[in-house]
Length: 195
Image (cartoon, rainbow, N blue to C red; front, side, top):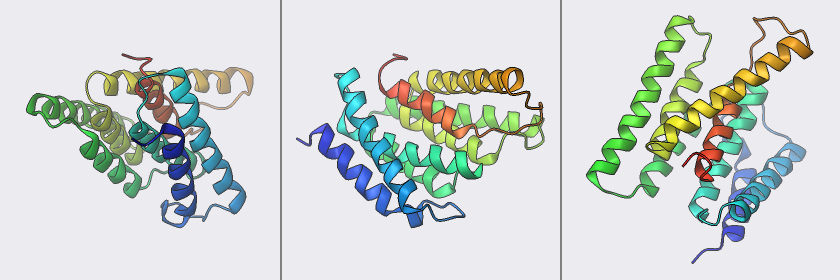
């Protein structure tokens, strides 16, 4: 059995070394790679401490999503390769029963279609990376965690936006990256907070 700390450390090392393949326009410097690796390791160990049901496989997904949050925060884009890795990891870790697969697929597709509608109604105000990632995350987390995690992420983004408006007098047109907030909701969903 793989220990959670070993999985978190291995994931931190692999993802830090894989920085050239993150899909970001600008290669992350060594300091940023070390910071992301430390965040991945700390997140995996802390989550296991807070949630006794935390599995080592969650540490891998949490590590991947930490990279998603970093790239989106810096560049306001979620690369397709990170979305695809989320879907593939969701497939690999899925309990293969027909009702479970249908529920996970329906959750992912429902979130994808909802965010696509928001994208169309706002004329691109919500990026397609967020649309695709929300669907992939919903598929990886399944029902009902995927839906609740997405809702928590949007609430967190809304609170952050209100703080920007009120405290820092940012304009309504100031763009924020939704990816880190979707990641936050997904991590809370994996920790069992939304169960």
